[in-house]
Image (cartoon, rainbow, N blue to C red; front, side):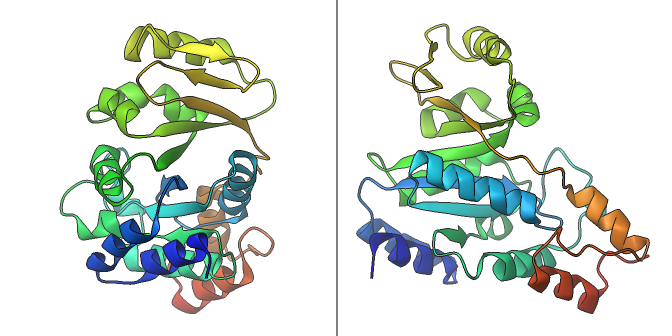
Length: 243
């Protein structure tokens, strides 16, 4: 069994104590952290994670569904168990994707700083964490809880479209995080002498949104080819987005 496979299996085991076993089997791993509501998960999420895994040479991409996201209206989000089940179905056939329910096991709002502190205990340095984030979300990073401390815990991976404006990120990092961030054009990342790097990763950002999928389902229209068939069947069976 490979290092990657062992780590994946341990994260899929519950209760939470099983996660601690990962520490014994990890050394210099590169772990992608992909958070979101996944309401529902769709091919845009999966393709993004696949490309980042390949481009950065990650051992694992860990999907972390938010239980109670602080920046979204929770009344519009289906219960965690449904989003978890859909992710289980969507990730089942990919050996380098895994899933963690740590934000649902923790009381209160789902703050990224708390999740990353937890993961750092499981994967202490020299293991590397890479937090995947869209450019719009990254531009709002200063509204996050303890946002400066995030850069001590994890590298960031900005998911960018072709033509992405490097200058905007440079200005934000230098003015809000640290004036010592510098852009490394050869490696397409922002480096810092003591904080974690900020990578810019151009990926195929498919024009698919969870909001659009929910509207299609509510309107009785097809969502085929927008989500995996297993997820489509789950949505049809449970009627979670109808009415």
